[in-house]
Structure formats: C-alpha cells, structure tokens
Image 1 (cartoon, rainbow, N blue to C red):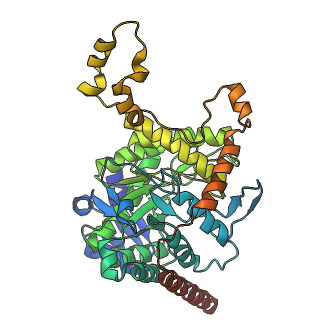
Image 2 (cartoon, rainbow, N blue to C red):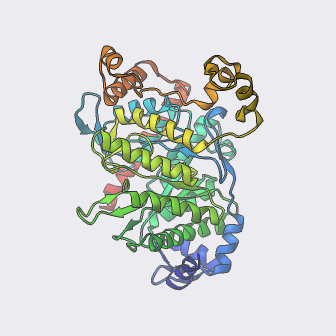
Image 3 (tube, helix red, strand yellow):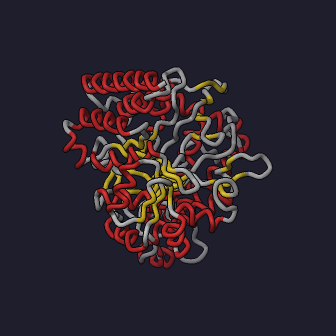
Length: 467
C-alpha cells in the first residue's frame, strides 16, 4: 500500500481526456494538462475510498437474479468477446450472431452462472458500434445482470436508452441497474480517453462500473508479482478516485484480468499458476481497500481436454478460496479469450459447482457433529445409509455431479463409454433444443433492436466522416 501511494503521488497516471483532468484537478489532484498526467495525493485517495461502497446490488431483469454485492459473496461472470467458436461439430469458425444468441441461451441454463457477458463478438457485423448489437442480442436471452462494454460516451447513452425501454424509464434503471460496464484501462498507468468518456457517462446515469486493468507481468508491469500488484492497484484506484470525485458513493468494482508474459512464447498466459496467485493476492489488496473485487481470466487450452480441465479447475478454485467476489471469464473461454466452446461451457459449469462446494467448507454444529447418531449406531454398525440423519443431510452435504462419470469400467462402457467432452456435447445440444427463454415482450425486443441498429449505423457514419 505504501508503494501504491508513492506511485499515485510521485509517478502519477496518464489520463487522456480533458474533462477527466479537470475533474481530478477540482477534486484536489495535481494535474499536468500538457502531459495529461494526474498525481493523486494520499488524502484525496482516502476520501475517495471512504465514499466508495462495499455493498450494493446489481439487478437482474427478475428479482431472483439480483446480485447482492459485498466483500464476502462469490459470483461468476460468463465468457467474453471471443472472435472464434468451437462448434458442436468440432470445427473452429468465426463467431456469428447466431453463436452469440445460442451461447447466451446455453449459459443462461447453467446453474453456476450469475452474471452474463457477451461471450463472442460476431464477425459478420460491422465492428464499429458492435456493442449496441451485443446488448440487443444478449439481453432478450437472459434475465441475469448484463456485463457490458462500450465504445465511448454515446455507446453508454444508447445502452441506457435500451435498458430504459426494458424497465420503463431511466429512473427505474438507476434504482435497478440491469447492466454494468467494464472499463479496461491500460497497463502501465494509462487511462485512454474513450474509457474515461465511458466512466463519466456511467456515473452520470448511475451505471455501476468494473474498473479493470489487464497487466502482463514481465511485459507491461514488473515481472515480480508484488510489483505488478502495485501497478494494478494504482491504476484502478486512480479511476475509482475520479468516479468518487464525480459522484461520491458510485458503485465501483476493482477488476483485473491480468496474467503473465510467457517467456518461451511471448504470449499472455492467464492460466499459469503465477496468474492465479496474482489474482488471489490482488483480491487481498481489494479487500484491504474495502472494495468488491473481480478476478479470473482465460485459459490457454485450445480444446476441451485434460489441460482445459486442470487449468479451469485450478483457476476457479484458487479464486473462490481467495474470496474473489466475481470470477470473470469463468465459462466457455479458451485459447486466452480468442475462442468460445459450447462443450466447455457445460464442463466449466461442472467445475465451478465442485469448486464452490469445496469453498463452502464444513458446517459445524451439534447436529452435524452427529454424536447422538454415532452413539445410537455404536461400533461395527454401518447402517448410516438408512438413518434419518443421512436422509436429512444428503442433499445438503453431497455435491450432485451432472456430467461427471462415477461408474466403473463395465457399466460406463455399457452406457456408451462416452468421455466428458462427449457428454458435455450431448448436454449442450439438449439445452439448446429445450431452453428457449422469452424474458421480454416482443415489442420491447423489436424496439431495443431498432435502437441498436440505428445507433450502430450512426456510429459507422461518424467513423466514415472522420476518415
């Protein structure tokens, strides 16, 4: 923390948006407008942390999907922004709009997913303004809180307009924020202007934000994990300070999707064991600051195989045991976020269920200690399976696997001898055939699609004019 304070007050953060610089100056920071540099004194940071809430609610479209946020609860966030898809036919292809809809429906049926992201970016649509199309495609197919992204202030306004159609008004959206926005800052210590535009617009409309940095230890930050943690904290806290200066009490989540630079390939690795340790340690820092924390990132595996299983399991379990409040990119993502897999979505849901069961630990009280049951049955009496105590606790203490095989060889072979990937493929096909959610009235779906398309076309025109 002492090093974080020194980075903020002595080194500073580059903020490439004059209105943000002006707000930071007015809030008591030292601002060099020529260099776009902001230095944050300790007393300004302390004031910001004193108003940043530790508890708030991210709303679902339906109350049963509300996400009460505090420093103890643990949730998962779905996959994000893959450009390719591993289809149920085993072929890798460019992501399509139909993939986005189908993968959203698939994730929506999973027991252990709490917050929905747009798992792919369709490649057949214009990429300018794509975020509006994502919003209009995802939100009708889930009732979970939507983890969105933007392309500037106008994008946030368009998403507010669509969400207001769903809820009836922007005032209703302020009371029940059914979407959030992730603001990906850049390491080292850079806040791009477009992200600052979005932050300020989110604050204006009361939209909760994930202030995220994606450090790469050994590449964009020091190779030592401690040094990377210092950069992450300083970078995120600068953004949090801006949000609190603009609107004290605005909901902010400390977020990272950091990893290491693999020195043998030069690639980012989020599934390396060092990356999981980095996320666990950063979670401790976020808790020190009293901030809800998002950790977790992609895995390196390129197909749903043993590598994918162990990478996801170690990553999710480490994050859950470390108290990461939002485990990000935890469903369906492979090839370090380039690839989304239908099969891996189902497998990841199984892994998360098991990891969460471990993280819950052991309930200890007079009834679970079960001394009276042990005394009643006595030595050499193994009739526990028939006892009322067993029946009462069976569903509470045992995790029910979905696609995990526990049969011995002969029965497994008699049932078809299918491995986990094959069983996941069967389950995914079943979900897609049966789960056809209708969360919104058709007139609202048509209206948000109209808004999204018009906004995208406007964004494309504006980009063409700038050229």
